[in-house]
Length: 385
Image (cartoon, rainbow, N blue to C red):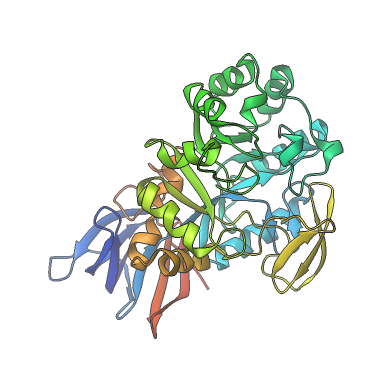
């Protein structure tokens, strides 16, 4: 089955801009990108996208849940409901993220995620992001202290046996005294992020030397950027090759700091995430994450002792916020939620941009009074309302 989507403004990841034309889809893959006026090969059906935008499906590599469910505890039905909710929000690919929990529970949750990764329903589970247990207690945030553990290489090896590639591990790597924890992660093929950390400048640089490629939710759960100390945040901003995750909801990071981060990292290494928890897409109320009770009021999630407990952000809103806060075009901000996160975890050959050979994961949107509004999601070439 070949489908021709025409009349649209198509997003060009390399140019960070749109052009007039369309996409030819063959089954579940993009076969060709065709500018307006050029010949179109034979096809079986057409979709008129006149006046609309064709965007790559969004990629969220750090998210704990939504729609009333959490990846740590959701059963198969809960996982399916989350996958469908992510898809409706415009996210076609995600890395389900596990917060702190006992080792056995993390293994069970990883197995459930892996089992659902082959499903055709909802967004694609691309792998597992482990952000829990191996954190610095002094920067635990919303993670219950009794659920944290030392960076034990043998324990990590057991856990990774339940996590097929790709997987991403966020940990306090300054606590990896001899580098054995990082060695196990690299042997497994996992990518690594520095998170919930007290690392000073030297420790953060050592973590990068040992293989850390990213800094999880930059500025949050790490020492504040200081003019005499630098620290992990400074290393994140000044290490050219390092990725920096950003929760762009206007609560976790003020707009001025968002702009500074963008100016330092650009759209090549700034990765928009949601760090969303189970209340996302739902009502205010009482929830939980990583063993902690969470109260959500006016969309802000806090533990009972006042710590931010993830977000209720949808990724498309994060893109729009980045454009506003950093004073850049939407087309530049969009790369930070599509191609760049996909490249960070090594799946950019599959998703993240509209290119021949990649999955036909497409967000059909319309610009309304300067706002970008999602109208239709196409996943694996199939239209989802």
